[in-house]
Amino acid sequence: MNPEIAIDLFKTTVMFALYIVAPFLLTLMVVGLVSSLLQSVTSLQEPTLTFAPKLIALAGLALLLTPWLLRSLTEFAISVINRMPGLAH
Image 1 (cartoon, helix red, strand yellow):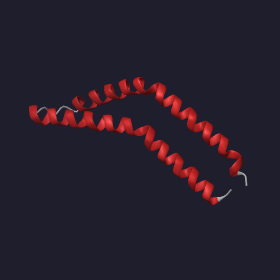
Image 2 (cartoon, rainbow, N blue to C red):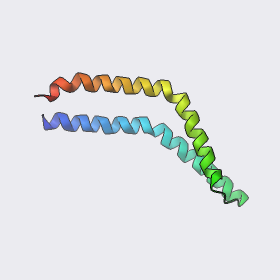
Image 3 (cartoon, rainbow, N blue to C red):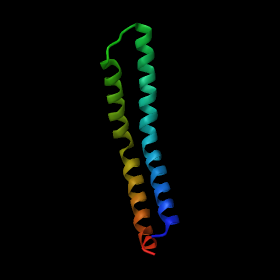
Image 4 (tube, helix red, strand yellow):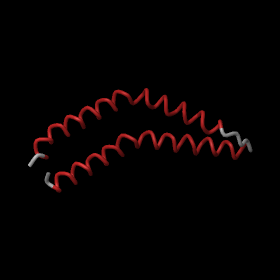
């Protein structure tokens, strides 16, 4: 295996993983920030007040982004499979 091809494949995979995870991380960060702000304003320190909204937001976003996720993962898998003959050299 060519080291340049392996490094390029690794870099592509890491960047794709960040591309896929970014909407979820950003959504959870915003929901956590808003719920923490509401907790500090109202002086409620209940742990479920941060967990439940994050869980609901994550589930809703997963349902909303499922077509995009499947299309992206399929395209990435096809591109990696098409590059496999070049890895054998």
